[in-house]
Length: 194
Image 1 (cartoon, rainbow, N blue to C red):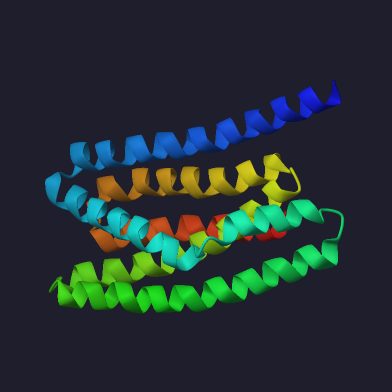
Image 2: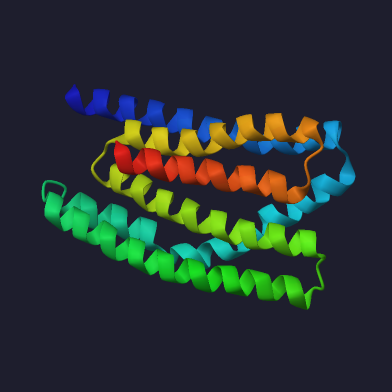
């Protein structure tokens, strides 16, 4: 019976987290299109596309590896801390490379200064998101799905709230991506402090 209760609890928390992701992914583009128009929506879509393309470079498959390794030795906190620290170092290095590659791609594509700034901010946000994802993976490895859900929900709901504030102010793409970045930073801070 305990096994079933654990499965239901973990599934409920993950549903909340993924629900927050789905709502944000659905609402933000519609809100941008409705409130500001096609130009900002297109810029936002470009930044999210770049984020998706370069995400695999910054994470390098580490979340799955971290979940597996943490689950194997879930009671060994020093080992778990060591794994997370090593993964953080790798992700930080890969994130710097990613920011450079994203900026270079923007220059090759002859993006405007505004779009180059937004692309660079997207790369930085991706680095913070990747680190938060590592923490979230650690929680999943020890089956603390409630904390995993808190990390994901902070990221998604935080961005949704910030976007709902920034878009009516007619902010440019770099404002919106700065909000995206701050939601990732907040998620990382929450993940570290819980």
